[in-house]
Image (tube, rainbow, N blue to C red; front, side):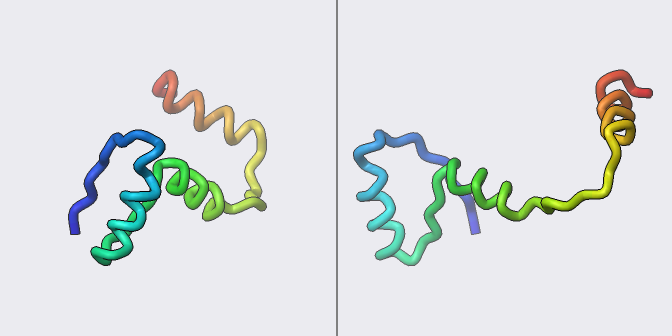
Length: 63
């Protein structure tokens, strides 16, 4: 399967959604993808502020 990114006017989204449904294609907007990602993230993570800062520092400063 190939993913294609299109930029279309807001007024044409419903047309493209209908077309995709009729053709049996998957259809998601970038907003839908972000919402789906956020919903899949765990909400109860056992990590301290110090551990977060250490990870940020390792990426930012290579430490």
